[in-house]
Image (cartoon, rainbow, N blue to C red):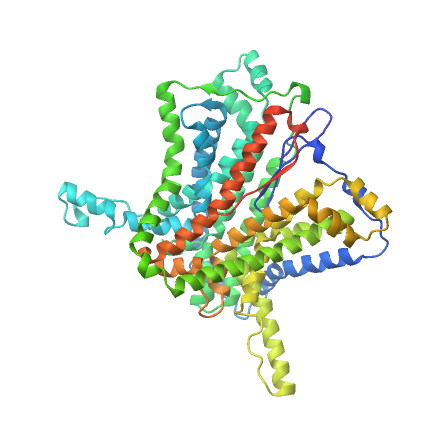
Length: 601
């Protein structure tokens, strides 16, 4: 989404997939062609980038190929039996989550941006805290809290003298509406963050102009402010729906038959990889439709801001006492239900079961998660640097297309990615094993499938876009004149990268590594399938304990995931506050370009 002034310069926000938001201004813009090195033949940098992009795209190509050429085509059977249920439940889940996150995210963003009330400064960053809680963790917590034997219903029965479940009505949380509520609580920050950024970047002079034309306050909100922020809100909703498609832990625990749950049932339950690939392809179609809708929503969108000298930040309206109470409740309830309650319950269970849970299994799982996430973060950052620098050197159409395709991994659900990794890796293992058996009489076994390498590869593909986005944003800050000066002194592209670019983009590299690390710690769908035998991570241990109804024993695992997830939330809050401070000091076109990475829920 982009806002332009009368000279056509980009002023405000450019949002891209890969979980990143880019706040940019003209001071930071550079001409990519200025840094390009004219080449008649393919250079080593371009060749390496193209090879990496092809490898990253291999899982998606494998899924589509197997879907069209399965060993056993069960598509007609799926179409006549369960497919309609999968599709309807998935659509209802997506629409429900999108509606809830839209209402909470936009209303809270409007309140903290345009109104002044007690606690506003706290809610400004606290509304981001649910980012740290994975959806499957909050689902396990609230199920334990609200089920028949949980503390809520037990308290109600003791207060009112009820004996049996038939004596009263209490809604079941393990339903499709329950899954919708759980995802809303942890995914609304996507919409909140983007809507808040859009509201902050709207000049007060626009509201004054509409007021001078006799437009009422309500009309200014719904006919001026919200339409201007609509592209940002749509991007947030697209990210929310992609995360909804990626979720497996919640829908599996609540027994909601969605496309993601059906993929696992067909693949693992029916032992039909081709059928799983066909469901995965349908999920990919959903993702492509979401991306297309998001892009079409921004097509021909041009919101004109005042010139730099006339831009003024909007002032906040002081609310009355009754309205302040309502505003506080509106902002506090999402934070209470999305973070405080889960963190409190997990903390209590951790203390209760500390001696039982703090054992060798916990230490091994923590080390596995930290080790896998660290290696994946290093790999993603390294590949992100390669792609960004190759694109800087050779910004050709083919290079830009290859880099763009390589960055689609974030939009691919983890379950789909797991199938895409299994197919080529299994084919490689079977081929090598057959050759070894034929010529040497030995069996090589599994070399790639079911190994740590497969898991790291999946993590890297899925979160490469996040690393690339942060690194590319930082690299674009570097003036092309620095490249020209170093080149005139006889330095090679590799030397320029090592001595000039890497020191200057250090903060972007650290941000990318941190966010990829945290998201790898949370990743569940791909980890469940691709992990080696008897190789558990924090996420898989939480899933297994919850599946066995041992929420207390899983608390320490879940709490560690939440605590690690708080790191990017704090980083995100600091970055957005700095962006807001800059916007109050200067027009958006005069601000320094900043990169803010969105962690997944």
